[in-house]
Length: 129
Image (cartoon, rainbow, N blue to C red; front, side):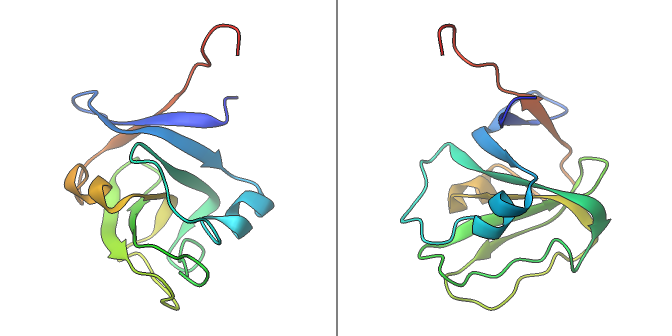
């Protein structure tokens, strides 16, 4: 399974995030975006949780030095919450239970809205890579 995904609007195929790191293991989730100084415009993290819920998919912004878009998605691929998360805030919880979470540049909020259905397509590595 590829470590990277392309996130698209399911209805149109439009790319909303070109490179999202599939973040399913403990260490990837633990590190998140802590201590990073920024993100490229077209990259982010796609957190995958074992169960759909509100508490398990909550985030904190300690040691994150820049604002991010936080987009929560349920197990059916539907966006259930999307908001701007600011540095050093103690907690953000989704409005409804979620199974996935995207963290990316704030401009993602211009391309995604609550109610959108998203798909996570494996990103095929370039030949020779």
